[in-house]
Length: 282
Image (cartoon, rainbow, N blue to C red; front, side, top):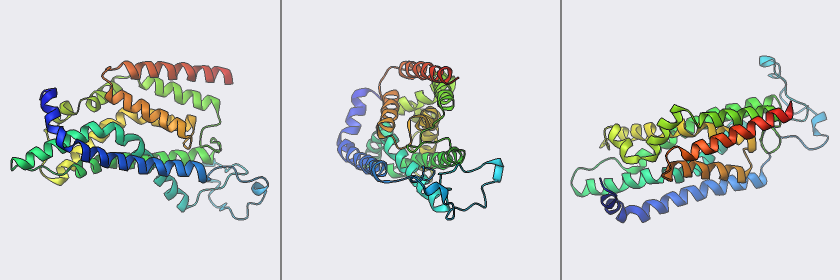
């Protein structure tokens, strides 16, 4: 399919699909901004003097795994896990929806032509749901990681690590991953929607098939971006500028036709900054 043909396929559906994606992304970002402005997250330091009164804290699990809850930090309850998971899931929707837009536009355009030809395929919503389900699973893992870091008092009030050495090693690891073959394979699948579809058997007529196709695409996206998401623990899970910066980097990697240039330049920068942080802290 040439660029001209692709443009013709997408033209009639571009406005509707783009509007829907914009609404989803805006709502997700509005929620993240509201949280950043109003919420005190689990694991954040309690107000001055509150740490000395532990009567309201569940102490029964403090000895598990040899861990302790630092004085002045509130232990998580089940509602906290649900809240933090929701935060991560909505944040992933806000960060990843813009970068998957080219794939969804292609899918919606082809779906319209397929319906007109009497060979309908499953709706775009099934594909998008499969894609987002991958990031929902990631959000569960991220919630567990945040709980573990908070339990060991390794997070500050913005949910960034307060250990320069840990933050430095996370930056180094993320930077090195940007240069790996796995990163390159996953990024190429994300950068070329048509090539992805060709290598995975094309579009699906059954909803479950479209859902599985969306999961496959989401898995490549996760393989491409998981290390960048780990950087949220370096700059702050509730640091809006940091969140936006990572989201922009993800978008540039997937949509700007520079091949491996952007991830490798950013990876080298991350590794250099991480090395500097580690040596400064030693």
